[in-house]
Amino acid sequence: MDRKIDSIGEMENHHQSTQLVENFSRHPGFRRMFAPNKLTIGLFLPLKFYVGQMDVLKGQADLVESIDKRNFAAIWVRDVPLFDPAFGDAGQLFDPFVYLSYLAAKTKNVSLVTGSAIFTLRHPIDLAKAAASIDVLSGGRLVLGIASGDRLAEFPAYGINADNRDVRFRETVEYFRELTHNRSPEIQSSLGRMKGLELLPKPATGGIPLVVTGSSRQSLDWIAEHSDGWLTYPQATTNELGPIMLGQKINAWREKIPGGVFKPHMTNEWIDLVEDAHYPRTPLRGGFVLRTGRLGLIQLLEEWQAVGVNHAALGIQFSNRPSEEVIQELAEEVLPLFPTHAGPNPLNTSW
Image 1 (cartoon, rainbow, N blue to C red):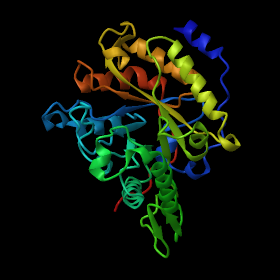
Image 2: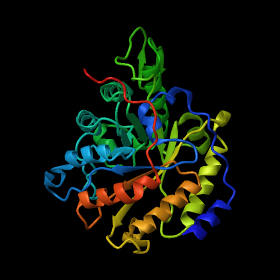
Image 3: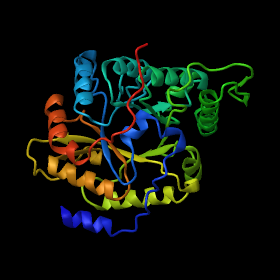
Image 4: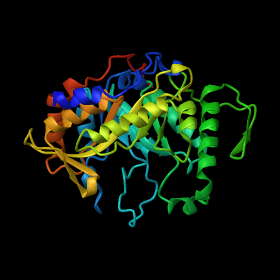
């Protein structure tokens, strides 16, 4: 294990700036998840996939409470407005903003993350109103992963041209930030015109981090300048070559970030964590899922950290073991090696 980590460390890896994004130095959700040259761990919901019955989600909120108490950095929820049987994945089922509000009331510290809110399918006023409300209600724990959308069947259902989603994504990000940052914004956009009005509430600490997912049909330069972080697929996860390739991608992005500001990188993997700690990293479903024992997972997380990944979002939906067993093993054997960061406490939420 040490030999592989050393070999990755030998690759040219640009130093991550210690200068935090100014808007988020006091943001509890951001600071809990991200720090230069360190990696934290979060868990993706749902913990079990929908296969025709909502029963698979029973007890999930109780497990989220356990995840919070065990000090994982984050919980992630997905945004799938409409189930497409041809796509074969219903996602979280609940609306992400509604469900995060519910989970905010059941948790105290864990960061609440969307992975990812489809910014092209909703109006920026509705996005900003929902996001700012959750951020305030949770005491500043919301981090927004955002995307342009890849389920093309959803776009005509909304009456939106999927071919223009790159432009709509950029305009939505700009509109969203004007609403959440300014008291009386003047907005002239193809998405709407606004003057003399204000969005309330404002985010708890002045802003909400927007983490761009994949390319979202944008250039690397645009992502470097306009995102507050970047979430990408991990490349192959069965050996060190995938993390090396991922590190090259991260370095190319960080070279373009203006002013040397630290912006975090995130990646994710669906895992089947087996009881045998020594079970080797083995690809399943064409590499879409990683079956491994905890030592192989720890090795992968070390490799990711070495190349500049700051947060790993793990999905355990494909695990054959009960979710509570997997969460317990991760909490006891893996999380201590990649501890959640101490930062500002969530603000008073006695609304």
